[in-house]
Length: 405
Image 1 (cartoon, rainbow, N blue to C red):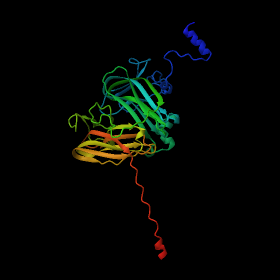
Image 2 (cartoon, helix red, strand yellow; image 1 turned 60 degrees about the vertical axis):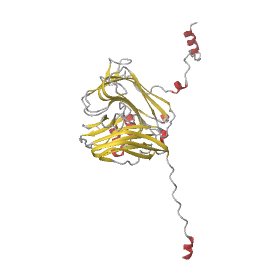
Image 3 (cartoon, rainbow, N blue to C red; image 1 turned 45 degrees about the horizontal axis):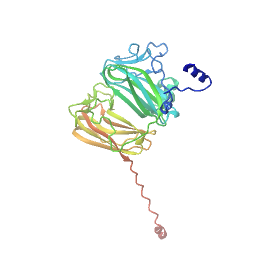
Image 4 (cartoon, rainbow, N blue to C red; image 1 turned 45 degrees about the vertical axis):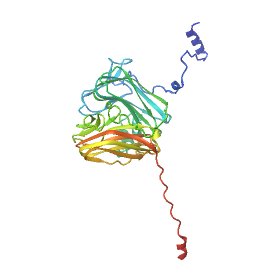
């Protein structure tokens, strides 16, 4: 009797036959199924000519951006998602995205988002990203099938009272001009109280990026460890290709955030910011890194940087925001402007006991004419938050004075 026939007979009697090498491991058992809708971009959205079910695209209003389902370079199946851009006059991210509602059963686990990407003539930076929020408006908009603005109108929540609170994000940037299919992955802890997870992938720059075979699984959270007196920032001297950093700047013309190889404080490069003063409102601009680590809670930290300003008509500074379920907190930084040669600046602060993320910024307020340079930056954990001294007790009432009266 063949082995296949024996397996069928055993299956009919409720006995499980394990082939050699098929014994499930603990890690395999802990990994959840793929939580994404239409992960291979195979299913269309209704009768739409190219939109895949379950996915959305960014809206920029630029005619240079083209989204599609590609049938020529798919990794598997018949389709891959594609985003292409022809103009980098205004710095913007163009991406495919999918969002999920987070429930209590997901709290305390790691969300593992993976995606296969392929670069085609990329000039700039491509990325995959996972961001976790507590955001009633986005949650209800997804439940009701309306826009976020419409959900705000329905709930009578004004813009000034927007409940959006980000509690963690992870990204992976890559900038190879041409690649075959490459698997990318980011892993993000899901803190308590969060209710909305957004996953995205796309590019900042020109060229084409193709996406296929996406996956989102839930796994047991990795242990939170933290080293003291160690610089936790990646590429602190900006000697790499910039992929360790998140570049954040508004969609105004003439604003530049880029590596500079002429004015470095040490090594070969630094970061340089400048703009032509054409923005319409003040916006935080520069580079940042999120340190997503719940072990930061209750720690005393220090941010340092070397800064140089040249005829700056605005303000620049280093900053750190501690993200907690209640509200973001931050120590008040010192602001710098006008013209200064290279000088070291520092900022210290205490992370609240419910901190899940520290967002470390090296920034200036744009629009502002002039130039700003940053180099040799650091973020260190110095130890536990010092205990505050108890206030002195009030002196006991003077009983002798009462007797005299």
